[in-house]
Image (cartoon, rainbow, N blue to C red):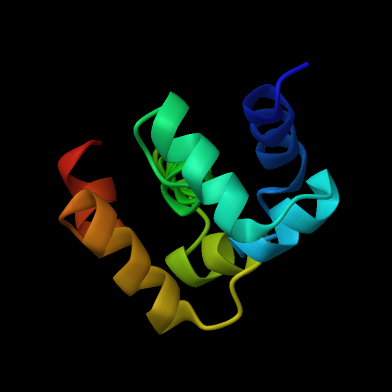
Length: 105
């Protein structure tokens, strides 16, 4: 199995508890720089973008299919600073989680 496939599997398993590329790279026994380079070369996205993308996907799912608060979503996904989580979501999606929920319901 290629390093990219292994990385994608790790993201799917650990997206709630691993946040840094360094942590994922450690699980793959490679350097963070190597993981970043391989992702960029094969997928055209950075390792951080791939990991964050899975978190954003799960955030959207939870916002649309549950009534839990944004801060509860953040905590569930391993973010203990709700403001940071909201900023991360807004940077990626273009709206706050609350606005996303309102616009898509």
